[in-house]
Image 1 (spheres, each protein chain N blue to C red):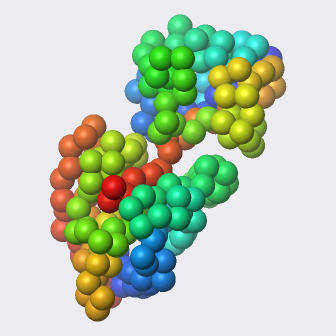
Image 2: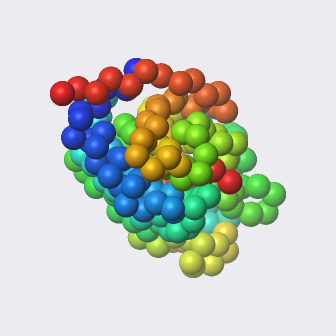
Image 3: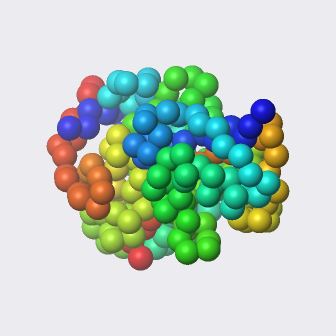
Length: 135
Length: 92
C-alpha cells in the first residue's frame, strides 16, 4: 500500500497537468528504510514527449547523490500518461529497476479528473496497490 | 589504489549487498570485465553484446560515459564510476 500526504498527491497531479500533453515525471524521496515519501523532486522529462519519459541522466546523478547524502531513497517514482490509462505500459515495465519504489502513474487524458494509481514492479511483475491519502 | 564503483540497489545481489566495490582496468570495458570476474553476472546486466545496455547509466566521476568515449572511455586509479538504472518509460 502507498500512503501519501494530500500535499504530495496534489503536487504530482499539478505537475502532470502542467506538462500535459507531454508526460511529466519525478521522484518522492523518503528516509532510508522507511516507507514515508516526504521530499518532492519534479524531474525534467528529457524526452519531452507525449508518449515517452526519460530522466535527464545528469540531473538523475545529482538527485540520486543528494538522496545518498541525506540518507534517503527514491520511494515514489511517478510519471503521467496523457492519452491512455494510468497502467504501466510494456516500456514502463521493462525500465522499472527500483524494486523498492512505488511506481505511481497518473493519467491526464480526461480534462477534469485525474486517475492516480500505484504499482510495485519487480522483475517484470506488476502488482497494483491501494493508495491512501493522509490528510 | 583502484577504481571505486558505486552499485545501485538492483545490482547489489551480485556484490553480496555491497554498495561500493573496487575494480581495475584502463578502459570502462576492461573495468566491467574485471568486475564480472569478481561478481559473476554483473557484466551481463551492464552490457548487451559489445554495448552498454540502454537502461543503465554509467558515469565516470560526474560525466555520463555516453558523452565521453562509451566503453572505450579511459579510466584510472582514483576514479569513481557510478552505475544507476535509467528511469524511463511511457505510454509508447
